[in-house]
Image (cartoon, rainbow, N blue to C red):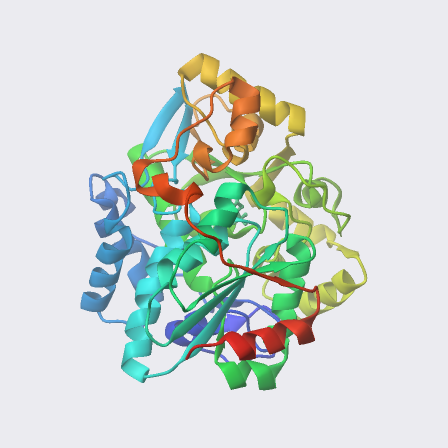
Amino acid sequence: MRYISTRGQAPTLDFEQAMLTGLARDGGLYLPEAIQQMDDIASLEGLAYEEAALRVIKPFLGESFSDDELTRAIDAAYAGFGHVARAPLRQLAPGHHLLELFHGPTLAFKDFAMQLIGQLFQIALKRSGQRITIVGATSGDTGSAAIEAFRGLDNVDVFILYPHGRVSEVQRRQMTTPENENVHALALDGHFDDCQARLKDLFNDHAFRDEVGLAGVNSINWARVLAQVVYYFTAAVSLGAPHRAVDFTVPTGNFGDILAGLVAKRMGLPIGRLVIATNQNDILHRALTTGEYRTGKVAPSISPSMDIQVSSNFERALFWAYDGDAAAVRQLMEELRQGGFTISQGALQALREDFVSGRASEAETTAMIRTIREETGEILCPHSAVGAKVARDHLREGVPMVTLATAHPAKFPDAVEQATGIRPDLPPHMAGLFDKPERSSRVENDAAALKSLIRERRTV
Ligand SMILES: *Cc1c(COP(=O)(O)O)cnc(C)c1O
């Protein structure tokens, strides 16, 4: 399996190289040259999550990892999850189901991908003896998931940039309390989009990139998207696929999680609609509705992991919507630097064949947490509530809807308490979080300052 860049000017790589690299050298995102159909989808029924993961992921790896290595990596990745089903489905109402993706060690869906790539990185680095510096940008949940997956590993330093003052206290403490020396939490003066932009600056400085062995584990990393494809299959199959279609609603920020749904669909899973659910930062909803992809100012919300104006992974969907025309994608991304672009009629039509969209305001999100609690007793995190609200606007007779529950409510206790009067407890394994000392460094919104800090702090 060969991987190509959405911008067409970076070397073609195999799976392992694409995973270790993250962002392509031309600024683009790696994608498989072709997506193979998955036959015998029906045979996934009744399998353990790990077995289903092996079947879904394996065809994308080519020669990079042996079956035995992949099996061990998958087993180790999900062993620490707090639910034996890994991604259990729960019924919210007739025809509406919740896919609980928050049973991993940091209580957000990001653990599904990060735990797996932590294992795969370890195998690859052991084999090559290479040393790397992982730098990631986070709106809150990626950072802790990355730290949890890479802390204490040999040959790796992990630096996480988060927007100072704009992540929840639980999210911050998950990043600042691990004691491992190879963990570095950096509070950047800016928004998540600034963190993401500075990260791109580092990757686009090829000399620096080679000097420190820069590796990316942000949601632009293809291996992360791939790991997330699995739960679309397990959920859909348990609701009757491939014999019937299933719709999914996905609370969306950087477009990674929902892109995994598109990959599943391209592999042959009968997904009817992929519903993009945004909070008040609704660039994707506006883009789908009007064809205009224009960035505005980030408005901080109670679902902070979705407070994003530039959805990096959308570039992959655009690449497919433009029929693999890398020159067209380059042109759009050039225009984006000036504030935005207009999606061509043909591409917009292609996008609308797979996606619909909706948004939830702050008040609607709070109201939905309360409603779901009253109707079912379930307590949703605000991101999942954005999903539930938009999903309810898109229910269709005879087609099951699955809403992805992306985080545990205890990660966002203030918003949940405000809506329900109940302050959700952290699970026992995280009980000491508020007593541990914190360790983090403030950093300016400036690429040069960031580079010198990384050079200075690296341990490998
Ligand atoms: C990251 C995150 C999202 C958004 O996921 P994307 O892949 O960036 O679209 C939604 N909810 C939670 C809780 C998250 O951590």
